[in-house]
Structures are given as C-alpha cells and as structure tokens.
Image 1: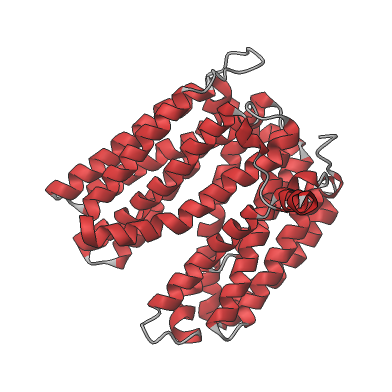
Image 2 (image 1 turned 90 degrees about the vertical axis):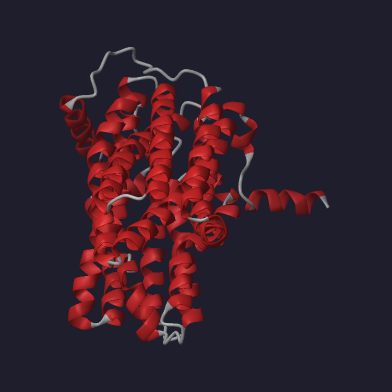
Length: 417
C-alpha cells in the first residue's frame, strides 16, 4: 500500500509548496480571483452586446483591453522591481475591486458603451500591474527547488478558473442577473486582498532605489537581450501562440467543419473549453515535473508537442477527435508554461524578475491576439484546415530553428541556472 501511495505522490500534482504558509495565502488569493475575474470576463462582452446589439463593439473591447495590458504590463514589471511587491499587489487588488463595483453601478443604472469600454481599459491597466508582481513574488516565498511545483499549482488553478468561471457565470446570469456577476468578482477581490495582507513585505533585495521609469524598462529589455535562455523561452512561446493558436477559426469550424446542428453553439463551447481542460488535467498529474532538471529541453519538446497536436486538430474531421487533440495541446501548453516560468524565476535575478514577468505578460497577452489576425487572414485564403495544419507544422519547424540558433535553451539546467 505504501508503494502505491508513493508512486501516486510522484505522479499527481506536487502540493509541497502549499505547506509554506505564505505561499498558501498567495495561492489561495489567486484561486479566488481566477474564478471571480472570469465572471467579469463573461459579463463585460455580454453587457456590451446588450447595449449595442453589435459583435463589432464586442470585438472592440479586445483592443480596449489589450493596449493597456501591453503598456502597463511592462511598467508593472518595473514597479514590481522598484517597490514592495506586497504593497503593489494590495493597491492593484483594491483598484480592480473598485472597477468591478463601478461595472455593477453602470449595469444597474444603464450607460453607454464607451463608458464600459473606458472602464475596461482602466481595469486592465491595474490587472497588468498586478499580474507580473504576483508572479514575481512566488520566488520570494518558496525555495528554488519547489518553483516548478509552485508554478504548476498556480497555472492549474488559473486554468481551472478559465473552465469553471464561465460555467458559473452562465449558470448565475439567468437566475441572478448580469450585475450580480460584478459584485461577486468585487467580493472575491476583497477576500483575496485580506489574504495578501498577511504576506511578508517583499521590498527589493538589493536596496537600490528605482523610479520605475522608462530607463528601468529599457534596462529590463537590455537584460533580456543579454540572457539568451530567457530570450529563447519568450521566442518559443511567441512561435507556439502566433503560429499555432487557431482560436479565431473556432466559430467557423464549429459550424462548417463539424456541422453542429445548433448553429455551432455546442461544438464552439467544446472547442473553447478543450485547451483549458487539458491544462487542468495535466496540472493535476504534474508531480513528476519537479524531478526534471532540463527545463529548456522540457520547453522545446512541449512546444513541438503543441505543434503536433494542432496539426492533428487541423486534420480532424470529427468533433470528438478535434477536442481530444486540443486537450493534448492544452497539456503540452501547461508543460511549456511551467518550465518557462521556472526558467524565468531562476535565470533572472530578483531585481529583474518583475520586469521579466512584465515582458512575459506582454508575450502571453499579445501572442494569441496576433494569432487571431494571422489565422483569420490565412483561413480566408487557403481554408481553415490548411491554415490550422500549416500553423502546426510551422510551430515545429520554427521551434527547431530557434533551438539551433539559441542553444542556451537546450543546454539550460535548473541546478546551474
């Protein structure tokens, strides 16, 4: 019995970081906000569509959310390196909660779409500062050997929020109404803020006073260009997302490729949920990742596996098979994300971690949105199947080229940094 339990412990998700009280508080706050934020993610486009009856305005919300995310993601990383990270998380949590309350007010009293879009931009600016700071704080709370496990725990709960949050929103909206979703998100942020309040102070370790200005952001980019392993990890993620993320084609494929009799709704739901489901499933079985030292090899192989799964998705003619391939892609993406984050946390010095996380947020946020443009244009010319399959092939080819040109990623070991 003990042997079986030992094998299970080596396979299932490694929960050792949760024994550390401070990390447990941060992780719990992340879990709460992961679900709550998805309620607002669902409510905002629904409110915009109710106001305008136009999908064009709903699409415009993407631009209003992306621009501040890109700008303040970089600045947020500089703030995380210049100030006490606990304080930055607390301030931005309160600010995001305040925007959720304002969303509720606007939903109750009625408003025009431009106020909603403007408030969304403000909210995403604070989110963009919060995210790199929260991630950079992890390395100050857990020992280096547990960073992959802590990353897997955080990524798994984030993916769980992407699955459970929209389902909860869909269940609550007909019963309680759209405005209530904003209030629940605000309440979740208040609870998360109380948990973060119990964290220790995380002021810069080097004691250097910084202003988090353009010079600090530029220093971060110079540091990145000098660190080949970090540069390669970001490049591989860009390759995977831009060439291999076909989500812009899901609506057309749901209706025309898989012939959903319900106008694509059922198939579309499965296509959107499949990748997060794969991430959650693998996250729950990720205990063995903590024993792998070759993080760079892990990222490279995982990105190639992502490309292969996307090829399978592009060639699939049946919905169930397409979903299976997307679930596999989600698993590969989880492996890549765990090792890329671990590389960033260990290869970057503490005074640079916030700025590197800021670049990370820009890559993660910008890559899929650029992919929407690329895949949409390609599908218009060659069709959805060829666009998706060709993108998967391109992922594998470009990944091999990147690994050859930047061999530091293949040689990287966590134990030597």
